[in-house]
Length: 313
Image (cartoon, rainbow, N blue to C red; front, side, top):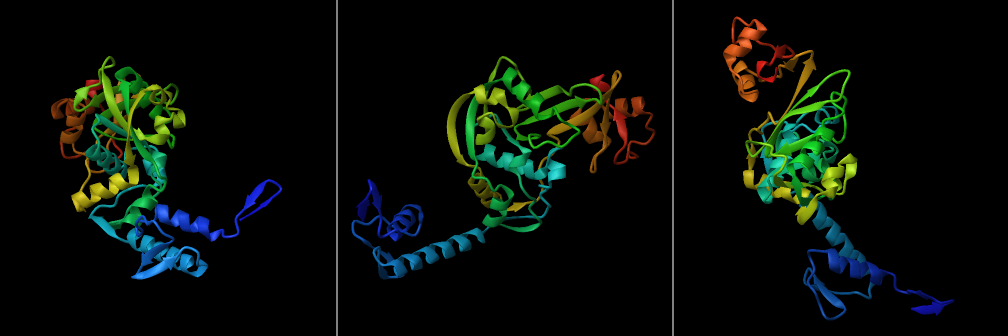
């Protein structure tokens, strides 16, 4: 190196590259001298050609790792923007399930913008996972009061039925909220671990670092006490997929929207709904649903039909 006008100039810039490769490459072991081993050959860090060869080997291994299969799915895992930003998604549920599987928390919550693309039926590779959740998000555990959590969930559904990147995807809880065309949306019911949310109780919330820092307007989460950094979100999903091996189905029914008009709340029937499942979701009975909606045959409901929910009156 030479000194010129108070600046230090490196003659051997490849040294910087070499040092970087040493620290980031899983192929390399620490060494006390200027040579390392690659394919049984000694690589001299002062040799530019050998350094470039080392770089190519690392990049090749990285590409091979991205194509490594980590699991499979027989269902389409929906990450389409127009879907996940206004309703729960089986992919969002899967990702948050993966978080709760790896950390000790009561609830896992992410914003829908965390998800960039869907995962098709078939084999799932590391590349698929990192295209699905491309940001290098860290999962942060926070201790949050029930009242602050309620405000956060209220914010998360505030734009519905419009799409919003901060619409929630969650595991460990259930939300029922109402929307109207002329007033603010309101949370009707929240459950955490199958129990009604207690505003005076503190919960452990696992979320991505963006929300933990107050991103997307989640101010209450930002104020909550940070407990720990639990690790990379994409790696948690990879580990979960390896553990599950085959994704056959993902539990749904965690986020439910109803329309409020006058004194009534209306639920729009979704694909796969039955009166039995709707009655369970809203803690009512099939008989009550049939009576208030004038239904004669319990098996004759159709997708898109709006049903009055008596338990929410």
